[in-house]
Image (cartoon, rainbow, N blue to C red; front, side, top):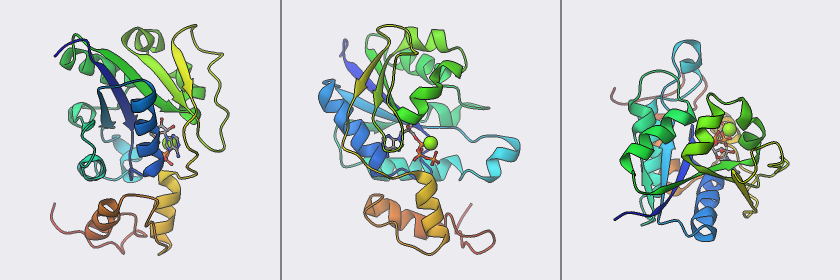
Length: 204
Ligand code: ATP
Ligand code: MG
């Protein structure tokens, strides 16, 4: 099938939470997207890698969180690419996978503020239309972006961040209702976000 409208939701997803899911769902409805592809970032190398969970865990949590929505899928393009993740590479890879389709890159207000400083920004705007969504605590403003490159969308306010979820788990506080149930269970099973040395991790 060609001529489809494909949403792209990039993120570290460490862990994926209901803020990401509501943003993607709202963009799907408002922009009549046929599919929204979630794309977890690759593993940052060197010193950064210590502060980010393994790519495979972030990928699997994203699969668990999106599995029940028939319009949501997950791509491994960034997880499987070597080196740092740049959105321009994500979009170029997805343009090859969806050659006849239109790409809509969904991004929160915090990320939209910085988008012009992203690697090869001009090329990014040629590969996708951008959808900037509201996020509590940030001003949604696309005035600094090329005319016509971005649409702004108000989504139900979810004052949730992955950072706060990680901090809650580390402090022994619950993340029920902030992240999907399967993600709560995955975090416990893999011992993610425990203070250093206190986690218990099975397998590789
Ligand atoms: P961290 O605290 O680790 O930075 P995060 O919650 O910001 O995590 P990311 O994986 O960095 O999540 O974000 C992926 C994308 O989702 C970004 O475009 C971000 O702006 C957007 N996003 C994250 N949380 C929300 C939210 N609560 N509402 C709307 N958009 C969000
Ligand atoms: Mg973030």
